[in-house]
Length: 123
Image (cartoon, rainbow, N blue to C red; front, side, top):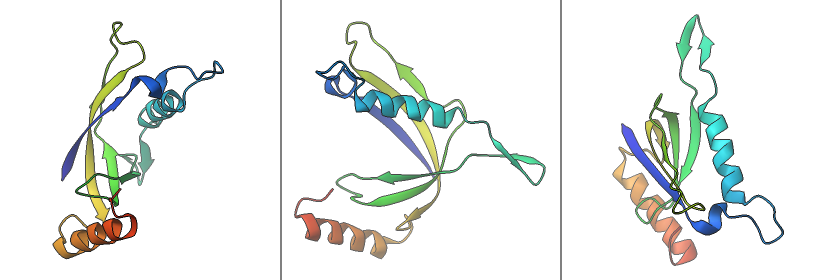
């Protein structure tokens, strides 16, 4: 079950800090680029994907752990000189498992209810 991913880091996310240091959003972006550039593992004599776990949070899925990998050559970056402190990207994340499972309506409903009952506002 592939999931299409897209992200945007706003101006405050990659602009230098007031002290002149690197913004956490930009440091995270560099770490993500390093992650997707890792060479595939070779186990049992064959090339395999590098699986990652991703904690995904939205109004519909306030707490969802996804297990899968970013499809090879699927990440694309837009760097616009008219918006130097903004970063936009897209990519395809192939989901192979999740917690709660995406094919279990009751577990998804329970996770949603638990998140909104705890915070009153969801994720």
